[in-house]
Image (cartoon, rainbow, N blue to C red; front, side, top):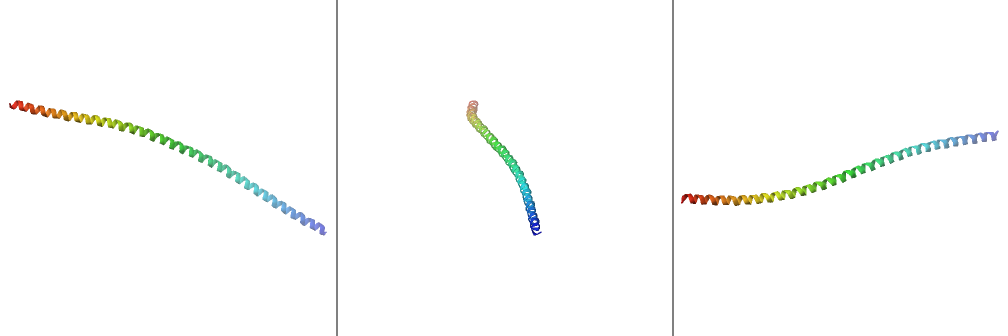
Length: 115
């Protein structure tokens, strides 16, 4: 009778351990599933960040190209402005010369009228 009782106790103890092991196995399986899902999400996030980095890199590259183009246009405009200023200066000098000639001619005419 004692042996039967010991066998029952052992059997119950083994059943309890088996149930505990099964619960532990289920819990580990759930944790593995959760970790796999987190890994998938982390990979997706990493890919998205890589895509965003590429977009930012493209934007920066485009902006640098636009800045270079605008600097070239500015340089061209500065050269054209310099040419226009020289022409204006030449025109002003010629205008001053003509004004001087006109004044001299007027003075000569006045002198001729008086004499």
